Length: 339
Image (tube, rainbow, N blue to C red; front, side, top):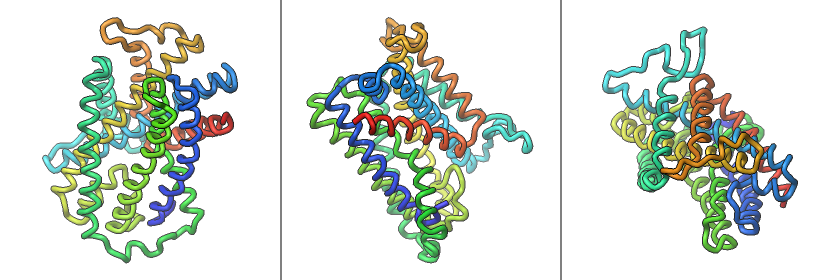
């Protein structure tokens, strides 16, 4: 949609998210409660609007995990292929009956694995998450510096094949990649000095993410012509394209680790959101029950896991990303109006 100008799409999406992020930061510092936009909607508009925002957020969190799980499956396939291993064709991707594909088995298994980890309690999950974040940022930087040597300036021509309208269309799709900063606001109740730290956390997160996305997309479109990049595992694909197979293996592993940390965060947030809505009487009370051993909402976690697994099993990355963007933009708009 955007050609090499996709790097500008990330900048446009970052600006839109920064404006929404400032509204979130304003709310998070003024009303430091758990529940993110759902709680803000309840307080500003009343229960009915809060309930609608809650569902928009559930759509955002759950389907974003399903989208990333579908991408994780593609990177896993690319990771195991040099060892002569292959996922059986019938369970290798989203439902496509004309090509004999029924569902994506790998994406379902990774979702179940992460949910089991979360059900054991949050302390271990946080330790794993912190280590994984450092590894994935290191791997992104390795890709940027390694890829610089394989850039062909010819791949940047034309830079805007579909003019600026292509960049805007690209921004509506890559917008999905910035989700997560709003999760920061859901922890406002546990933050020291939220007036100062919430805006720093939200805008800082966005700025770092935007720089990394910009760097990766500039290098990617310089290494490989954009017409060949409509794949679910573009970083590994680009490195294999320039015959850097061992680096592609290393980065596929890093990408899988990075995606796993995102899924862990979003599955956690989804279960807590359903718990918050059930606690307020807007969903069945069974979802507000806490497990005595781990003090976590196990019933909410189970239902979240089932819905995410079904989404990842049967739908493609494109279909899921569009649904996620819809739910998120709706929540962002109502939060912005609320301010």
